[in-house]
Each structure stands twice: as C-alpha cells, then as structure tokens.
Amino acid sequence: MAGLERLSEELEQLKQQGRYRLPAIWESGSGSWMEMGGRRVLQMASNNYLGLTDHPRLKQAAIEATQKYGVGAGSVRTISGTMDIHDQLEQELAAFKGTEAALVFQSGFTTNQGVFGTLLGAEDVVISDELNHASIIDGIRLTKATRKIYKHKDMDSLEEALRGASSYRSRFIVTDGVFSMDGDIAPMPQIVELAERYDAIVCIDDAHASGVLGHCGKGTTDHFGLHGRVHIQIGTLSKAVGVVGGYVAGSRELKEYLIHKARPFLFSTSQTPAVAASCLEAIRVLRTSPELGERMWASANAFRSQLQADGFDTGASETPIIPIVIGDSARTMAFAARLLEEGVFAPGIVFPTVAADKGRVRFIITASHTADDLEFARQALLKVGREFGLV
Ligand code: PMP
View 1 (cartoon, rainbow, N blue to C red):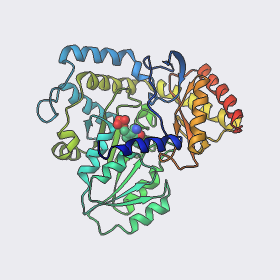
View 2 (cartoon, rainbow, N blue to C red; view 1 turned 90 degrees about the horizontal axis):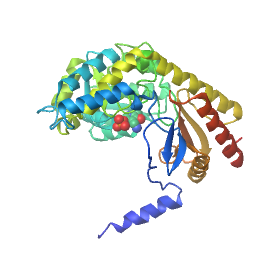
View 3 (cartoon, rainbow, N blue to C red; view 1 turned 120 degrees about the vertical axis):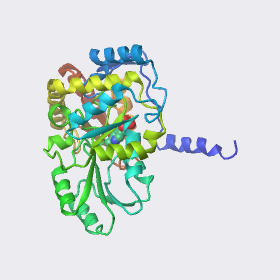
C-alpha cells in the first residue's frame, strides 16, 4: 500500500472543494424521463441529441447483427475483426460527410489519440483552441509536435500563432466544431481562410456537431458550406448517432495511413457487430430524417430564449448545449443538487473543466424533450434560481 495513502488525501481535498462526485446511476433506458433512485427524473444531461438510442430501427439492427455475427468481433480490425458491416459503416460515413473515405475507431476519444498521435511529429506544429476537448489535448500530448494554444475562437490569436509557424513541416489547426461546455460554434469560415493563407491543415472535432449542425446533421463543415476545405473531420458515434464509437473522415490516403499506423486502431479489438450495425442504421436514419434535428433545434432555441428572458446567464450558447452559469464550484454543485431534488437532472460542471468562477449547470436539449418537459424544467429552474438569487 506504500504510496497509495495519497489517494484518500486527494479524494478528501476534492470533497472539501465541492468537486467530489460519483456517477449518477440510472435504472431505466434512454428517453427524456428516466428512473434514478426509484424516482422519475427529467433527463437533461444526455448527448442523445436526436433520441436515436431508443430508435426501433437501431435496436432491430443490433439484434439482427448479434444473431448473425455473434456478440464480439474477435480480433483487431487488421487481423480478422473487419466484417462487411464495419466496411459499410465507413462507406456510409464518408458519403454522409462528403469525403472520399472514413475510418471508424472504438470511441471519439481513441479517434483523437489515433489521429493526432499518428499524424503529428517533431517537425510539425499544432495550433489548438484553448477550449478544445480533453481527448484532443491528450492526443496531441502523445506526440513530439510543437504545441501552440490560441485564445478561444480568437482569430487574431490564431493568426499570430500561424505567423510564427512557417518553418515547420506542417501546421495543423485543430478545433472543436461545437464546444461542449459553452455550446458555441467554431468560426470555421475564418479558420479555413487563415489556414489557406498560411498553408495549414484544418482538423475539426465534430463530436457535438455531428447529427446537430448542417443538413441532416452532416456537421460544421456542411453548416458553413466548406466542403473540400476542411482536411480532417473527426466525429463520434456516441452522441447524436446514439451508439458508441468514433470516426475520422477525409482522403483515402489519410484512411490508409491511419490503418497502417494509428495505434488505437491497430491494437484494440474492433466494434462489436451490434454496435457497427446500429451505427450503420443510425446514419441511414439520419440521412432521411431532417425532422429530428428540426424538432431538437426548435426546442433548444425556445428553451434558451425563455431562460434568457427569465434572467439566467446562458453564456455563449448557440446550440442545444445550454449552460446556466452559476459561479464557484460549491455553489454550482449545490444548485445542481437542488435541481435534482426538484426532479431535473443536469450536471454541475466545475473547475478544472471550466474556469473556477464560471461553474455551470449544463442542459442538453434533445428531440425527445416535449414542450411540457421544458416547461417543467423551467419552473424548477425558476424556483431554485430564486433561492440562489440568480433571478
Ligand atoms: N471530442 C469531443 C469534442 C467530445 O466532446 C467528446 C465526448 N465527450 C469526445 C471527443 C469523445 O467522444 P466519445 O465519447 O465517443 O469517446
């Protein structure tokens, strides 16, 4: 046990800072109302943007694939773990994203490990938005590339970094498409313009934008009409797509290079048949169901406007991710706990994920939320907001 005593000391510190929390445990499947601790609670924390986790066609695809192929793939992709459904999923994803090819990983997190860990070397520089997701940060940390961080969405700061980067073999600009803690959108037209001026590669992580932005949820590149000008599009199959997994979409060479070199792809068993088949079905549903996204957007925009009219600070939100900024960690966690007592589940997000004084409770509006659900949430928020002196 020598040395492990510090774990309990550090856990104690987290408790004192109001940052100690174990995962909430659910007793029912997906949907807007779920069971927790024997109570029905309004779910406002899930990334299941379009309600696909519960879609009959996805469930049926998973059942049929399990019956046909079994529950496991049995091997990594490059040995004997590539089935026709993995291949079809990649073809479908490439068509959806408007790229030559796509490659699937086990999660969005490992996609970023694979893409950045493989493409970047000591001769390269990567220029990353300061609010990019942890999986991008960790992917970059795997490499010897020079790292530069630009201020959030600040194009002067990005240009300054690019100006000093001409001597590198290549310059990679990387940004989230939709930022997960604020719900704001990266200024892609300006980023692409700067990239073209300074001969840089543009890489976007569309985890929260796939299924959300663009026609039928094709993502940020489609939203801004930038097809052919974004070199690497990363996405997850775990949020709006409703299942689990990640992918990168781009050129055929990019795919083939990653197949040969990306360590999470090479050394980890491929997606289970049920996962691959339900992801494939999800993309097919997405391509023909614009109404799901339209419903989600209408609800999200109405909810955000209402909260703002009520006097809440929704920060920079412009998507179905809607934070309410509360303050320090302890106050934020207390707010989230009171909200749960009122029957609404939304997580408190605190330092170090966000700045120490910008703790927030984050709501995600999905196509499954009804007008009545959102009114229920609003009434709970008004009640707790008054107790905390926020409105
Ligand atoms: N990138 C971003 C921007 C994310 O928000 C997330 C999800 N938290 C991931 C990657 C990781 O995706 P996954 O959950 O599929 O591993």
